Structures are given as structure tokens and as C-alpha cells.
Length: 293
Image (tube, rainbow, N blue to C red; front, side, top):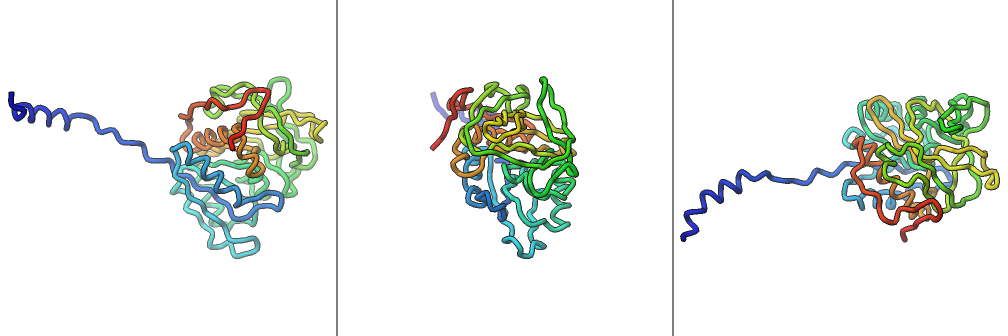
């Protein structure tokens, strides 16, 4: 039987078959360039970039600001070209035009990740403080807002006067998931360990439209507050989504699977509103941290 007889039918089948193409990668921008003296700043940007690229979901660019004290007027990243912006920045004020572009981007639906000491930045910028919910240092005080507390099974705010931002010595600590149905934390254990790191406490700010995803107990034995402090947060700002993680002081802490996975998941959520990543087998439980070398 001649194959020629079947070629027309085969051609019809081929042309009728749906063409499956991979979804384009999410576009992420890491903003760095200046950082306070206690944190490595640009030194960890390659690790933050690699963490996102490992998921195969992200294409990552980096925008590096001028050095401290230099002219910032030309620093104007094209935020709207990205699905999500990761802030690894705590330095000089941006220009009024760049601030407006960033606010418009987030309010219009852009995603943001606040990484660790980026929540120290811009203490007198009201919209930024609202985006991050709570922040520390930078001479913040009750003027900038309230403390977030988790007490008696619910989130409460505390407006008492006091400083914003503190931590004791680095140590391993346990995170407790408070929002198990949120896309970032769905499927994670109720309790999991993070390797030795700063445990931020006494952050304060507007605390608007915030969901506390996970807390950690700030033990007085570690010069802490005796409170369950917010470690992972999700904030709505206009149509935009902000994921705020206080974890990850430097390169060693970025090897913690607790940091890696929540950062990856939080960035995808900020970009899209959902999380497609499975929880990896090496994600820690309640007793011991898990580290990737």
C-alpha cells in the first residue's frame, strides 16, 4: 500500500494539532547599589538572582544605583517592564520622578519583594512605608506607625512609643505559619526551622492591608522582645502585591532552605498572585534547619 495515499490525511492531522509553547519567563528586576554598613548589599545580588533563575520561572535583570553621595537624578529603572521588583537596597533617596514611577508601578499591579534590610530604607517616604507594612531603623518611631503583634491567635497592633528595629545575636529559630491557605505558605509545614540569622523585632509602620504569613518568637534569652514577631508578610498596595521577608542577612543565611523556598515562592506570588512551585523534599521541619551548600 502506497504511503502517498495517506499523506494528505497526515498533513491535516499535523496542522490541526494544537501547538504547545512554553510560557514566557516572568521578568524580575533586582535593585541594588547602596546598602547600610551592616549588610553586604551587592555581594548577595548574584545569589538572589540565582535563586530565582533556578526555578526556571524567571528572567532576571539587575539595576545598580550610583554610589552613596553621587547624583541619583539619572537612576530611573523601567519598573513597568517587569513583573516583579526585588529590593536589595537601603541608601540615598531616589529622585521624585523615580519614586513616583515606583508607586505608580506597584499601585497599578506590579509586584515587589522586600528582602531583609531593604525594610530599613526610605523611612520618611509614606507610600514606601505603606508598601512594606512595617520597617526598622532609619530613625523610625511611633511617628511612622505601629508594631505588629500576634497575640491570642490573632494579629493586633501596638501603638506604644518606641524605637523601630532591633535584633539579638544570630541564632537558628523556628517559624510558625499563620496563613496556611495563602499561596506562599500553602503546603509548607506549620512549623519549620531557619538557620542562624538575625531575628528582626520591633518593626513598625502603617501595617495596612497586611497578612502575616509566619512569625518567630523573639526570645528574651536572645535579647529579644518576648513577642511573636512577623517574619514573612504579604501586603496589598493598590492592585500590586508585596512580599516582605526579614530573613537572609548575608550569603550564609541565603543557603537556608527556609529562606530559599519562601523567597522563590514569595517572588512568584508577588509577580502573578499564585504559586506553581512544589515544596521540595529538603524543606525543613520543626526541629532542624536545612541548608544547601
